[in-house]
Every structure is written in C-alpha cells, then in structure tokens.
Amino acid sequence: MSERCVGVVVTGDTVKIVSAEIPDDDDEPIGIIGDDSWRLQDGGHPDAYDVMYRRFAGFLKENKVERAIIKASELAGSTKLAHLESAELRGVIIAAAACACDVKLLKKSVVSKTYGKRKVDEYLKDDAFWDEQVTGSLRKTSREAAMILVASRSAK
Image 1 (spheres, helix red, strand yellow):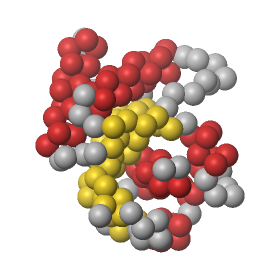
Image 2 (cartoon, one colour; image 1 turned 90 degrees about the horizontal axis):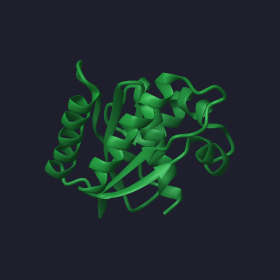
Image 3 (cartoon, one colour; image 1 turned 180 degrees about the vertical axis):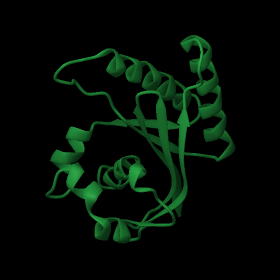
Image 4 (cartoon, helix red, strand yellow; image 1 turned 180 degrees about the horizontal axis):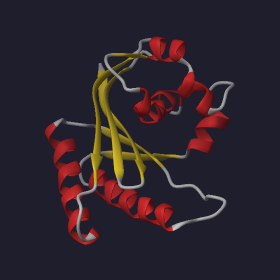
C-alpha cells in the first residue's frame, strides 16, 4: 500500500508542491504525480493569503492527500523582510494543510544531518540520485520539495 503525500517548499511569494505516492517499501522509488508552483496573487496580503489557504486546503482534500511534509522555517544570518513574508505564507500553508491531513515540518538542516552522508544541496545537484529515488516528471527546481519526501521516509 502506498501513501499519498505532498512535499512543500515556500520561498518568497511562491509555493512549490510536489505530489507523490510513497510506497511502503523504502527500496521502491517515489512516484511523482504532480509538480506545481503557485504564486501569491497580487494585491493585499490578507486577501491573497485567504485565496492561497482555500486553494491549498481544497487541493489536499480533492487529491486525498494523507500527509504534507513542509520545509520548516530556519534562522537566517540576517533576517530581511522577504524572509518574514515567506514565513507568513508558510504559516498559511501549514494551517491549510492541518485542516486537511497530517502535517510534518522538516528543517533542511535536520535533513542534512540525518539523511545519508551528504548535505541536502549535494543531493539536489545529483541527477543519478534522482533517477534512483523517483519515477515520473520532476523539475530540478522542485527537487528540494521532493527531497523532504525522500528524507521523511527514513524518519517514519
């Protein structure tokens, strides 16, 4: 039996969503179902956040997603307004996911320390790694969202 999951990374005003079927057997590759990027609509943030909340919650329910793994916020050396705005949008996504499925937050630094022998950024660049880990179409720019799905398998 497999589990329907999404990996989510929020950067700036963009939400990257990788939808996948994750087999119970950790030796089987993850099946990529969808690879999407959603931008926050122009205009006032409260209205845009409301639209994004409803869109994401609806997406999760319609696709019968069982678990969302969302890249968690981390401290940056120098926090700028863009970091804070990303954190606001990430909060909206977390809240929307929580009303539709189980949610797990996973920090990139934790993945680097607990998954494999390399840092996340090294895995993101490794085409051979991705050929082994997933089937289906996955953009290189969405590998970080897929990586949290890959890493979450070993953290069950």
